Image (cartoon, rainbow over all chains, first blue to last red; front, side, top):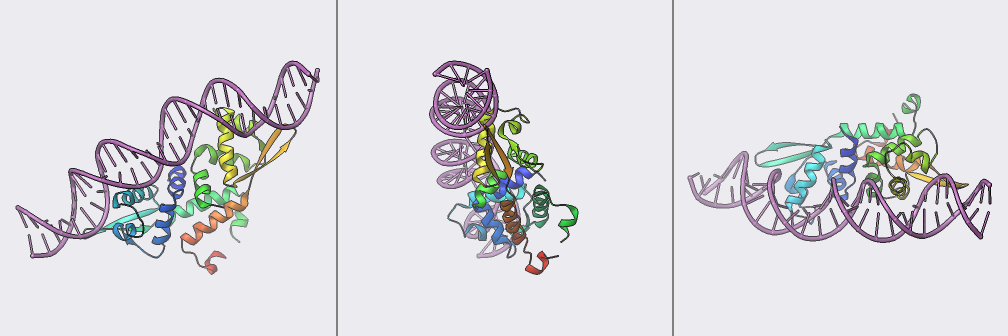
Length: 94
Length: 94
DNA sequence: AATATATTTAGAAAATATTCTAAACAGGTG
DNA sequence: CACCTGTTTAGAATATTTTCTAAATATATT
């Protein structure tokens, strides 16, 4: 995991909205795309950035590709941020 | 606070390193700059991005400008991320 | 007041990111 | 197999970001 890739992925509003949509469950590329006023190619580009950042993973089914949140990277980012805040091990457990 | 600005600020390795340095306490622009192989102008640019994102604040003293971490925005980001993970209010308290 | 030190601003060059259109690919269905 | 649907890839246009040099500003010191 690279924080550069992760934060870069999170820095785009379209990509953050995609992640928020995926909170409710997995969606196909087409379903995701229909929520935006953009071509499928552009959505595919954003999904590829999220995939590289490991913020989502995909699974194929028929000729659909489903995307799903990957929460483990989110936890790593939160850990980095909490260390930045200077949280001690004890404080972390509260 | 805008998540776009915050994540964009966090997406650059130089800026993340500046934040990590500031964890130890406040530093002047010059002190920060001397840790990097870049001109003062470039460091000033990065500091302005961090300032706009409210990840740091500055205070002037003599002809030095000191920078300091602002942890409140970091907490807002962590909250956004924990909501993305789908954490319930109860789980948050553990 | 002149000079020195610390930092920022302006403007330009180079690198990266975002978006589009058109074409390609992959898996079903008639 | 030919075709349709869903998605990605390639390539180009545009926008944004990062970095530099040079100049400007602001505060202190002599």
